[in-house]
Amino acid sequence: MKEPIETLLFDFGGTLDADGVPWKERFFSFYRAEGLDLTADTFESSFFAADDRLVGSLAPATDLSGTVHALVANLEAELVRRGIRAGKAGSDGNRSMRVASRFLSEASATFAGNRPVLQALKERYRLGIVSNFYGNLEAVCRGAGLAPLFAVLVDSHCVGAKKPDPAIFRVALESLHATPETTVFVGDSLRRDREGARRTGMRFIWMTPQGIRAAEAQACAEPPVEHAVADLRDLMKILT
Image (cartoon, rainbow, N blue to C red):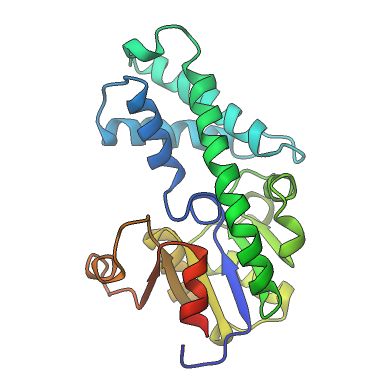
């Protein structure tokens, strides 16, 4: 890092709750494990249709459990609408409960590992979250025990702008009295997070799944990503 870093902004879903694995990919793997036989492209369109319907439909106080169960209910309805049948493992009608429970269990474990790292980062930097979310980001972070660690929580539905639009990043920067030149954004999406950071003038660190080497991660991006990490602990090596 060439300039002194004063502020760290983070994506939420896929970054703070799964060390770089987006929600869509996690749900796809869970449904495949339940015996659902469909392509990644078919699942992707179903997921985004379910996801879009959730924006603005949740009460602001809805926590992560309520959010995930509502999303899975939307997804199940979308799969039925498209005529996609349950696999053998899901034929007992409890598939949605198992998928939601597995998602929440893995997220809880990741939160537990990330809280101490975020606490250490908070002692040195101003921290914020910028997320394309449903209108209840604050309640989700509060329920996960993350809210006290961040000085600002920017929810796309609440501010009327979505990543990669620089407007949503500027909300966080202005709230923190921060400048793009001294801010780093950490996220799992090149299209939303890296592009938004680039357009705002911030540096970017790519959170990638465990097992992907930084060199490999950089090679598949255009332009190449300067820094890639497998989990939050690796941030310390880059920022110091």
